[in-house]
Length: 211
Image (cartoon, rainbow, N blue to C red; front, side, top):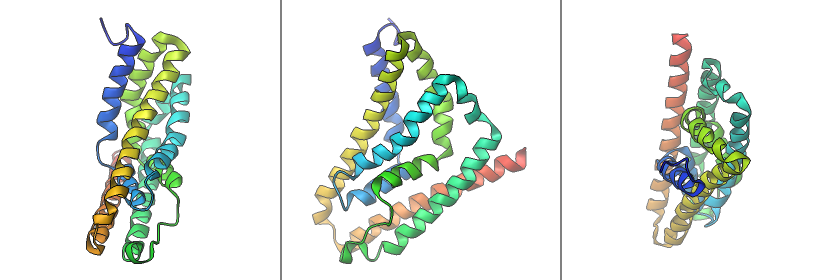
C-alpha cells in the first residue's frame, strides 16, 4: 500500500513532511518567540498570517501557476525584497530590545502581519512549494478536490500547532526570565532575522549575476 492509495495514509505523510519543515528554525520561528513573550496565542496569529500567504499559493499551484515560482526573476525579486524586509524587522526588534522588558513595549506590527511578512519574505518558502509542495498537490489530486482541501488544511494545522506551542511555552516561562535573558532572546531572534535577510539578499544577487 502506498501513501496515495488511501487518504488517511496520504495525510499522515503530509503531517510528517510538514512538521520537518515547520520545526526548522527560521524567520517565522523568530518572530513567534518574540511575540510569544508578550502573548501566549501569538503563535496562532503568526500562523494565520502565514496561512494568508500559503493557502492562496496552494490554490495558484493547483490551478497550474506553480511554474512561475521557479522563474529566476521571481526568485531574485523575492530574495532581494524579502531580505531587505527581514533586515528592517531585525532592526526594529533591536530598537525595542532594551524597552520590551521594562516598559512592555512591543514591535509596531502585530503577530498576523509578522507571520505574513516573514513568510512572504522567504524565497525558499516558495521554492519548497514549487518542488515538494507541488509533488504533494499532485498526489492530492488523486482524491479530487477533497484531497487538495485536506492537504491545505492538514499542512496549515501543522503550522498552527507548532507555532502556538512555541508561543505558549515562551509565554508560560517568561516569569522566569530576567531582564538580561529577555534582551538576549530578542537579540538572538533579531540576529536570526538579520542572518536570513542577508542570506536572501546574497542569494538573490548571486542568482542575478549568474543570469
